[in-house]
Image 1: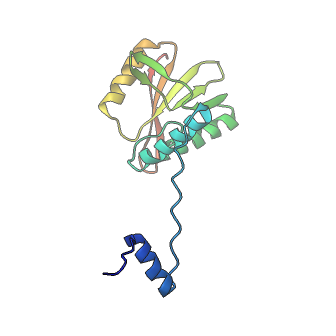
Image 2: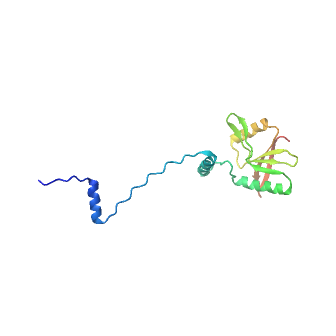
Image 3: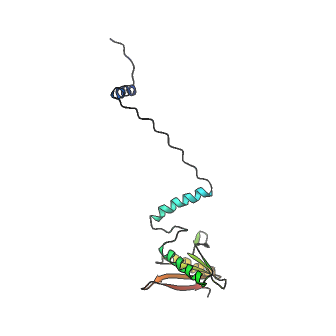
Length: 165
């Protein structure tokens, strides 16, 4: 019998590829370790990623206006320029109604007499929104709550006041 040489299948494939002129593929680099998110900047970035996912589901994203809110913001800005109101802010205040229940009105509006009004824009009312508004009116009598809707043809703003008159 002849002398037997020990060759592995990898060596055999490499030799065959070399005869055929096939270059070996370079090894894949190891994946980079996941970046640990630390600090408020990374948290804001993570919230942005979550917001993008929620946007696709049609859910409200805090800090971003929907269509009716954008239209009402333009209306408020016109009122500010005309001197009817002093200032307005979008989602500037969050009211605690119960242990884990909050109400965030869409707009906080400062009137020339110094009163603060909390404006809520609605295209459609969900049951929980109605309850939260009623509880907020009772708990915070120092504010005037205003529900704003776009109604009629042509579309016009309609206002319904709650609370302080």
